[in-house]
Length: 463
Image 1 (cartoon, rainbow, N blue to C red):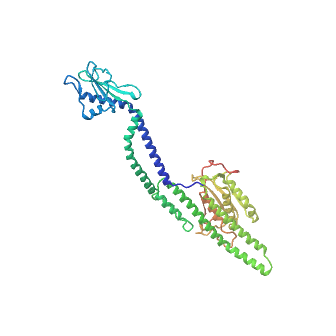
Image 2: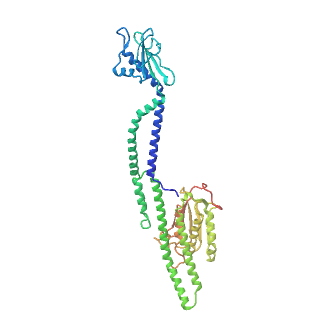
């Protein structure tokens, strides 16, 4: 079993990972930039020192000398500092050098057209130096050198200097994570409310649904799917309760009659077996029809009519007619069938066959004369195929055209049957996207079913 996880913690973890990845990428980019600029850093430093020394060079007394501010004088006097310089006259003789030099630097010629020459690197390891020469206005030359600093040491020092920025980022990062935690809780609050609404749905409140108000757009499809499932469960629950109530109501009378017959048989010592068999057969038919109706109601919610297989309706009508033909012949009734060779539509073959058989049984039991069944294909662009089953009887009284499709409704209480046949007919028709009705003043029932697109799904075997 998969352990449940917290969506809020998962969101927080993802945000933290994104933040850490961005921070790491920033540091990597910064270090890459440092590597790119570190090579020119030393050159720019000694060049700046050369310019400062040129500005401090004084030749008014005839002998060049460098007049430095006190702080820079201390730098050039400290042996531990990295900067050194030497002043040469136009004859390349060293005239003055920094106090931290035991001996003057070597002379470096400078092009007369450029006041500052190119940066050069001398020595290796600890003796490595960055050297540049600058030419004064009177032809004097100042050579400036800086003792080499380890590249890694310089990079680390730059990172140490910028570490203050990281310390500033940390509080903002913590504040961001706290805001993410609060915002995620606020965003998930409608989902908690929806879960509480779903928990209240039950047998005592089957019509409650989850409200989609204030829910995120990403959650709305899930809520719609759950509400759809609750609606289907509610219909199934209502159908189950209706089936139980109908069965209890309709079985009460035959059970009472059967009980009376059994009591009479016990008192008289004689058993009317034909009557008992008739009562048991009637109860069996009633139970079978109730179960069949409940099954058809449940199947009608499982798949849309467009997803059903393609079948041949003409063949199903002929098969249903073949099942009732012996009963017609036993009563001396005639059965006329007028159907095309092939009429294709989508549906459940067993249900449609049962629907046609119930129509024929209804005409046989409650009608008169010849029973006819025919299929009318659409000719007006309606895309509805019509099944018409009728007889030569007077039909139903005006105003009862719709009530005959209700469960257990019978125009003649003395007539055989349970009153479920036409209820099954209408249920099958509606579950296929159609409907059933009776023509006023005629003993003819019309069932209309949508043809739909054929050939998209495999046809049933034998269709």
